[in-house]
Length: 451
Ligand SMILES: Nc1nc2c(c(=O)[nH]1)N[C@H]1C(S)=C(S)[C@@H](COP(=O)(O)O)O[C@H]1N2
Ligand SMILES: [Mo]
Image 1 (cartoon, rainbow, N blue to C red):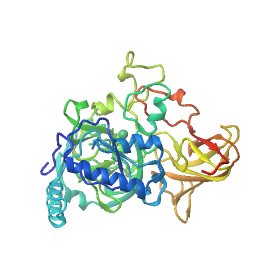
Image 2: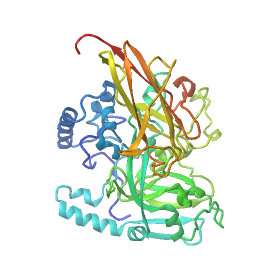
Image 3: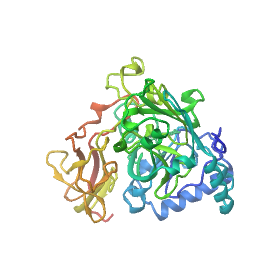
């Protein structure tokens, strides 16, 4: 792909929104000194001015590793609920961000603009495999298709992994509650793109036996022995216009940025983030689901009895939809407060396009519950499964409670199929630490002293 290659180190990372902090696996990356200095000041400024205070654990997770320009970025806890961040998202990549020609010209906005145009007009995706008409699609071909804006939440399957690891060690990058984000993705529907190569809408198998659509990226991963990051979804989902699977070139009305997959990425709404392949290079129509590492040897849900000695990856399906989730964002664990009224708010998200039917909050450790109010867009009442709601997007909840002594505040959500979050993290513990959707608990300490 002209102009887009995967780098071997972290020296060519893109400029980022100052409110995003970095969560990295390791700290031994080669980072130019100048970048480290600017990152340091950026962190200082943003933490003080906009996102302070954040929880200590998030500070360790994000802030303390902010100099390791690594693979993961996330929002500090409180920032999640601020207006501005509702439309930005977390970022997660397993490798370095592929630079574009554009990146080399950062600072010279005109040449940047021109280079971007050149790159975008040259960029293409090769669609091949078990189909009649393999085709090289240019960015222009994709722009020519009807454009859809889909508001969708991407949640990493590892969201809340840190809390799960407290039960028993898990393998994976530690995330608190912010490995999730929401955006308005603009792009072509995959169902329209596949029509360009002769696959009609609502096809579950092609005449050559193709049943899955594989997305292949340009970034190279050690998990794939240096090969590209890849994933697949069923052809029936890819060719169903109602599933809203996009080849997105815009995020929140702007061209996709490099972190989020510039110039083109897949967005599979309602499904764990790992299937929304960024920096898309190839689409293959295949008979079986993608055999890549992140489909077959990762992101599968095992029972608590499975450990690294007895694991048999082939016994489980790759995880697709994410289960119902909710998180209190207005309070940190542990918060100290004066007794009295306090507003509890946070986000809830249901996979598979299901709505959020209810969010229950308890201030007595789960003995009694009260229902929180739910909202999504200002001025529009949220009704689960209603045409006015964004079925792929998170829903916010809010309730005011009276705290008179130290206690544990709990939130749990129910989706429109009456699925409810499990009570205890122990019951859903799994060795990769994925899908921690247990009741979200925050301890509060009531204190009469002046805080
Ligand atoms: N090419 C590529 N695509 C990728 C990944 C990656 O490492 N490489 N990470 C995936 C994972 S695990 C997640 S959770 C989402 C995160 O998307 P975001 O960075 O836009 O939030 O991207 C997915 N797509
Ligand atoms: Mo992820």
